[in-house]
Length: 234
View 1: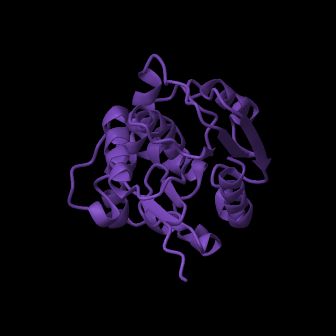
View 2: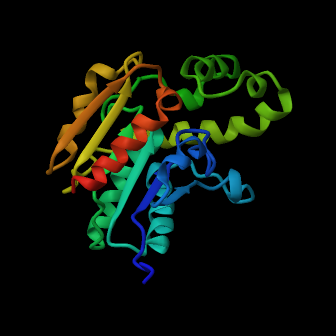
């Protein structure tokens, strides 16, 4: 008899400038799972919607998407960079509603309170482009093409403001589920990765992999294995 029980759901939240397609490089490693990337307005499948630039609004938008899609008792949240901060907030909102992920997996971010004093969303255009080049993840074909850059620039600025709005909050609540954190060994704040420990009342584990802020593209299998292990362990 065919097993009709729902698959474990893996919800994925993108980085600044990302969209629903940002994690396609991992999808082949999640056969047997329900692989569900979600996105903020103003990009991808939501191109005609108003761009959000506030952390609370962005987290609520994603939370409501996840709430509408939940159909399994087993699910996990993953976020990279901006997405890492957002999934912490989303997990808290879900817990208040009685929904408990197996864990959250966060990458490319040392957690709340560890941030640059630079307000990136307010940088002049040349400095803003240089910041994008420094972070990586944005093809030069986009940065050097006037029309493409004019399209993505307001989206990325708004996403950076989402991150900086988060840091203006007094506190992000700790969650009752495990946190698994990953960073690249060349990231500027990698030495602060254990900061995430303060945001869970459960277990905390971390791993540092070779690479810069977008190390995830070099390690799709390792990242996927961490996510699947986080599900199995809980």
